[in-house]
Length: 312
Image (cartoon, rainbow, N blue to C red):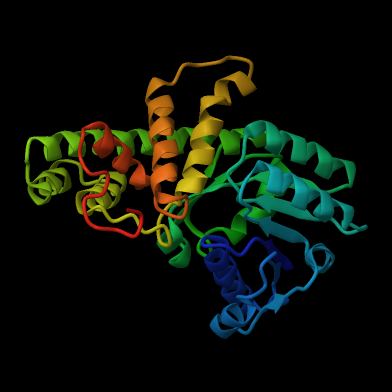
């Protein structure tokens, strides 16, 4: 099977995923993959990483050159705007759209219906993992949507993109729902870490000792990575999960039940959302979402920032 791969959205995650797909295509002697990004200032930098690719000046060109188009977009309004243009460019050839954005399930369902109107397929395929996992093709790839389209694209995921694939079912919204459920779990961990670190700081407990305890008793990625961030007061958003994206997913999670007709109270996520909003006020949104810890320190009567930063 020959894949003609397109990619839209070359941000922190999309760039690494696209480069890995381009290398995979070269190894299999498929046509050069193509990509488009609204900010094209990084095109030369991307070309220097891999020569087996085409970077497009116009969004519509990606659709015309491809039979499978990946997207990784900021939020629901951006996704709807971009996909309106993508669907308008669909011609006679069959195209499968693989949306790796983290969206509301109802947005995914709306986009699937729009895709079918132009004879295309749309899958909700968000990923779990930070930019370092995208670079090393160690993401966890989710899939939701029609079986035939999933069968067509699944061989592209491992080993080019992910270490494993989780099929969330044949309803396209379930892929997006699983992403929100998983991120809610992780956000709950970040909230609890921030709360207990604030408590430890108030009583004068050594953060290095506390993080050592966490490493020994909770040796899982969210505890280790986000605990390290909070213990040091360092919240670099470049290699992490940006607060802007985390806040968007938290708000989407709070309405997830209502979107399916069954509102559910999520007190931990609601509290964490409030702390993310305060962290955004204090730090801006270009930081890792573990920066919500500054709101907990502030509530405890401490300097929000463990060390002197540019935010003060």
